[in-house]
Length: 200
Image (cartoon, rainbow, N blue to C red):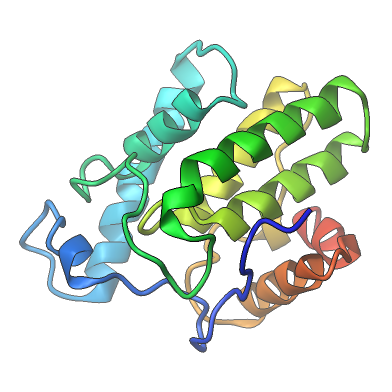
């Protein structure tokens, strides 16, 4: 099922550029460099992981949880955390379609699990790819999609993905290049590289 345009970037590093309205939403004004921002965001995400560990939440595959997770991941960083993007990017469906497309994907993932359409790892990998293709939020979509998938797997009693055995897929390098190449292969309905990557 085609969800919309899926080029994973025209930029060398695969990062989603922010427009001026979004960069204006930065909460900590003391950050100077991109490295400072990356470190700050990582600390925010670690707080979200702690929240996940101590919180009993209802359905992971719900719009409410999807948005709340993004909010928790970036609530100390961006004032738009947990809200859908309001502009088109170099990746993703047209921004007005985000809620519809996201609910379709969440419903598809639930159907795959209920009917065992795919093995758990393949369902999770397909779900991850679909979230990245939609690109619901102004930024943080890859990190959010990975944590969504890992949370889903843990709720199924399975180990989270290793994601190329690295905790950082933000920076440039061979592991990130493999990840982007696997997502591009999945754009063409070839999920084997992504399945290999997520457990490597």
